[in-house]
Image (cartoon, rainbow, N blue to C red; front, side, top):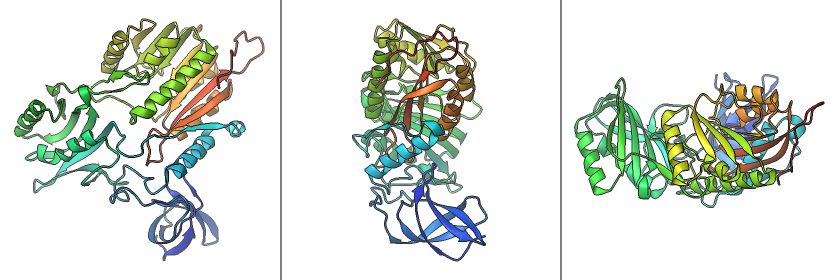
Amino acid sequence: MRSAPANVTLSSLALGGEGVAHIEHRGERRAVFVAHAAPGDRAQVEIDWARRPARGRILALESSGADRVATACPWSTRCGGCNWMHLSAAGQERWHVEHARAALPTRWRDLAISSHAAPRALGFRARAQVHVRVDRRGRVAVGMHEARTHEPVEVERCVVLDPALDAARACLGALFEGCRGRGDVQLALGRDRVPVLDVRWRGEVHGEVFARLERATVAGAIAGARITLEGASRAAKIGDPTPWMRGADGEGLQLAVGGFGQASEAMNAELGAHLAELLKAWAIRNAVELYSGAGNLSVVLARHVDDVVCVESNRNACEAARANLDARGLRAARVVEADAQRYAWRSSRALVVLDPPRTGARAVAERLAASPVAHVIYVSCDAATLGRDLTILEQAYEPMSVHVFEMFPQTSHVEAVVALNATPRSGDVRSKGPTPG
């Protein structure tokens, strides 16, 4: 049920990035979430009261809040990639800190939170996933999903992508001419920062696509590509589709094809420097790292800890991690292919580092709360699941520091690093060790 347009003032930003206003409706004070709104905006809004919270759409902006700026991308209100491009960098940082604070258990919310600003807010993304759709007339559309849909939004230029990746993105439409169906393409940087493609396709791929990829590889436009067809037992590879990025230790890091890597190389290195500071302060002898991926944090841990076990369930990521550790001559770490949620670490482990996916690590948090582990470093890109897991860890740990890193400028997402020390218990022989700064 939609109402007649209402005049509202936006007061805050919700965790998902939408602006929040409050308005009386049928005798009830209701929250209204409004996309692409900024705190302090006064706007005429069309409201859908059938949803809870109610959803609003700006019809006319009457006056702008202090954090509103002109967007660098004319498609930002349609494309689902950058939901905070209308906010200033300072506004984004401030609200990321507030969202991180809101995720903390109530009694921890007075803790100081350190914010690490991004050196660049445009042209920084070292990887992205775009969607490709071929309609019945054979026309190819390429882009990020439109907000709350599965339809790609076509843009002339993606201003947040590394320029080399944006050039590769612009060629995808011609690449998939003659195909049927739809798919996802992960764009990343390969060796010498030449783009690589990982394609997952549902439908028919025209045979000419492979020839086009061969020509692009020979010409140096891409370093390589992998194509996985729905139902196929094996993927096709052209050239070298291995992604590379600047690791948390500042050196080149090999990733698994199609695997995870941080969006911003500069912020990833800053996060690694912070991790190194924590490890130096604690002077830890042994640790276990869960959800270790291709070894992004492992290569930092192995420089400061004598004995590290790195646990990752993806076989290709494990192989990449071993290659990264070997390339650096780091013998302190060994990689174990196992489910991080179920992996049983030795009770003598002094530190657990975890960097789970957006779904968080509830099962791990429950085990940690009942364990003798003295220190925990939790790295998270999702405030909601971080808050859920910290509420569990609160039973046995106290926060030493909370840092947020602007890993995803122009979006409502932020990377948080929470360092925890065990709370002394009756009869507990664990030492909390020095407090990191």
